[in-house]
Image 1 (tube, rainbow over the protein chains, first blue to last red):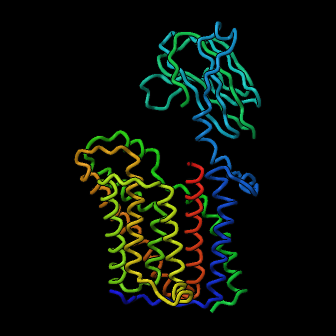
Image 2 (image 1 turned 45 degrees about the vertical axis):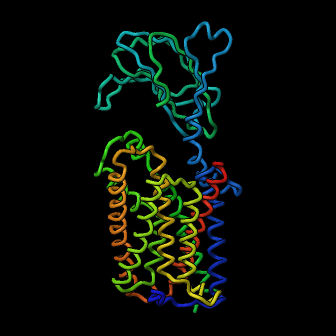
Image 3 (image 1 turned 180 degrees about the vertical axis):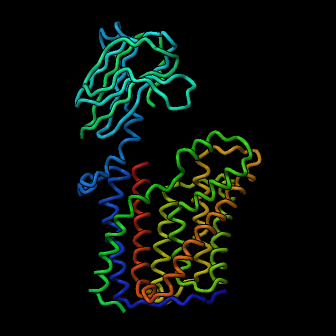
Length: 183
Length: 233
């Protein structure tokens, strides 16, 4: 039991020192340049950003914290719901409402920064085929109008921020709907 | 014995390779679907828990790196079975005691220790303890002790989900059996590759590099988990 059956070749002290220094340096480099940026958005060398790794660390936290109900001033009288949605750089998200057939929803949204590619669309309730109907699909920094739901189901926006900076969309709505929120 | 020049050249190649592979490998937790299942599940679910256990092991690079280190210089099937059994005994023990006894240790800290177990094994495989300290710590005892820590890691991850208390041991047993099945499955692949590689001289001349990388991988896991611990506190 206390004899070791393994035949481990014992390296020289010089080799051991070299291997340990190499192991530490390699680990340090990978941690600082790759793991730090990708996992925690800690990027002292800037290499993570250059490799585009820092985006990995951001989306989850940001998209969860991005919705801030923030009604102000007169807008509150004119609208039912006002929401600010931050779309991180180079990412996409969806914000949806549930409407019955023929229900109306007035809306107006505007981005504070870059133009956004968006698809305003609806999906019939209970449909599993992935079918959806587009109402408006273009690139713009704002849009407004009134939607009369052609069918019962979820209706809302897909936004894609292709710029390198986060964009905040202020979305105002009014009508007969139920907020489903971020998808 | 390696000359410095040769060593550093090979290190460089492997360094580049490792860096390319690293980003893929860093996300070992429980994935979203599994999480959803575990949070919703209130019953005895043998099949799912078997699968989750097996998947956790097959995709668990920290456990696999350690196992790779353990079997690196084991050539006889008998030895491999004995060492892997000791590892299994260790992690099964703490998995059960940890979950049933509600022992909760910070997941980051336990994973950091698991990282250190990989460093230990890499250093051991270089004959580091014999060279530096003049003694060889008992390798079987070491694998058992580190097995205990790996089991605590498994227990900690399972405890994050409020598992139903009724018939808890059934789900736990299924998870544990799954872990062992996953371990055997992964081991077969590792052994297949190692046995092919062992036919070539490069296995022995690369032993230093491989175990250096093992140490480095362990240090990366350690740093990754410690950073998580510090940032989460």
